[in-house]
Length: 321
Image 1 (cartoon, rainbow, N blue to C red):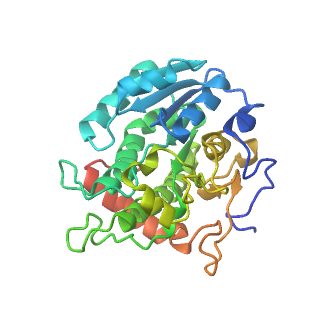
Image 2 (image 1 turned 45 degrees about the vertical axis):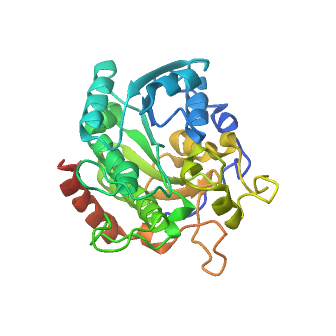
Image 3 (image 1 turned 60 degrees about the horizontal axis):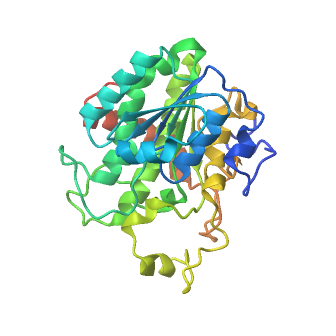
């Protein structure tokens, strides 16, 4: 039996765009929820899915900015307030979605913060873990009845090549006993995103809910807002003249794998996999840290199960599909 992490020979690839992926897709009458769908690759994810006929609900922490960006887009797009670091905001958002539809066909957990200075939410939780992972965990739990309705749905969790950073520590996820490192915190959150998809797919398969983790690629977006240009040059993202590295994707290209996981017929009956460049990824080459692929810990089912149980305790919501 082939490994779940076996590529499916997708017709799309590294430079494919979200609109190209969605070109032959008909989402008429389908409801889609996208977090952070008004910035970076989120905008192109929304544009492509709405262009395919979906009714898209965008969760936005900055509503005015979202309206400024999305009002010119074609299609059925609604904007609702959502702060993933605020449990009450998540609950209110989920209630508002439920008032609009009895089912959600696609959930794209796109919103994120990256390499931010140490900050904590009202519960004392480290902000990158709280926003990128726990907020989306609670949101999926609250939307679960809608996801499981009508035979199921797809959930797309945005991870990152940053999952390779060795920051996942479930004994101290909020940096209460260890020194804070913004990159280790980011790597921890992105590992958690991939592990969430792994466990959600395992629990949701019987209900027709399949989940996918996505590495969108390197893209110059507002996600880098907490990094100085000197830091980005040191990492090779920009040259001395301020030109972005040629390997970086455009936002249209960066959104392609999210849209592919949300819509591709090649993934029917599948889930729980880590994807990049519009296909299922293979294991990373440890001798080539800049190559694609995944590291083994995000495929660890025992770790995913423990993270799930810990997340339930942290958010105070039992999520047992």
